Amino acid sequence: LCFFPKDPQVYFHENLQHFCFFLFQITAKAAVIFVTLQYNVTIPATEEQSAETISLYYYGIKDLATIFFYMLVAIIIHAIIQEYVLDKINRKMHFSKTKHSKFNESGQLSAFYLFSCVWGTSILVSENYISDPTSLWRDYPHTLIPFQMKFFYILQLAYWFHAFPELYFQKTKKEDIFRQIVYIGLYLFHIAGAYLLNLTHLGLVLLVLHYFVEFLFHISRLFYFSDEKYQKGFSLWAVLFVLGRLLTLILSVLTFGFGLARAEDQQLNFSTGNFNILAVRISVLASICMTQAFMMWKFINFQLRRWREHSSSQPQSVKKKFVSAKGKTSRKERENGINGTVTSNGADSPRSRKDKSS
Image (cartoon, rainbow, N blue to C red; front, top):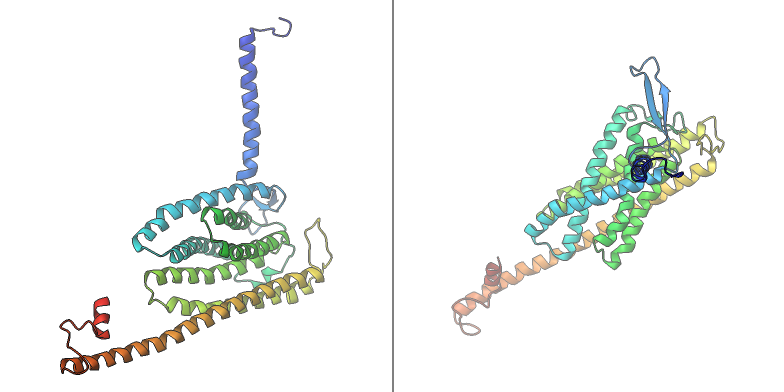
């Protein structure tokens, strides 16, 4: 009775309610870290802005929890698109195993690239990055960024991290796993680098540019799988791919070799997020140039392989026409009783075999 001044059962229920409420508060606080963006700063608005205050964001260690949560969301969305869209099309088209995997890859990536292009372009327009190219390096470091900008980078990192477990879920072939890991790793390396080095303005422009070219490639491949005679999209993609690589190099050289190189503050400072020193600029520019060179090397090999396949198919088509013409002559000879017995259905004629196959 000294320990329980009230009825023991009532005392137990009251404390259970308090404990549940306390547990709910802890769970809600933990859920906020995973769902909402962290590290926001409220800044008073200027005279030119109608809003009273502006909320800007910077990055921190808690962003890993947010990235993990949206990585799980990306896995769920990936499964929904696969089951309710791509699998239904695959069943109708009756693709082979190779085309089936490539169709799924292009279907998923084209949806992601389209979404990212539209969203990224809206950020570029709303923040006036397109009308003012000097914003790519002006007022560096860009430690404080708007909500849309940070959410965009969080979702980009979450999507490409989700691609690792998808290698297991999609049962990727062993010979393709290394290629996919390199592919995913390059995206994560450059996106995380732009995010951590406070180069979000330049990173956003280059991502939108790259995603638009990649979207055109994957949507062209989807049309190609439905109709193998469709080649116009690949021709346009080839031109835009080269222009995209050239424009990427131009913007990178302007930013690191012209804009940031002439900035007044060129001292490494982790507290302010300033990484504008010569070693960092050379390293980042070198990584961008090496990536563009690697992509151009893959592109040239891809085009040479297509050219060889196209050139090797032409002699075969000419040979088929020659054989058809020869078969037509031999058929006349047979009808005239020359070189053997005449068949009623003409099965020995290559021309008739071609007609039957068609």
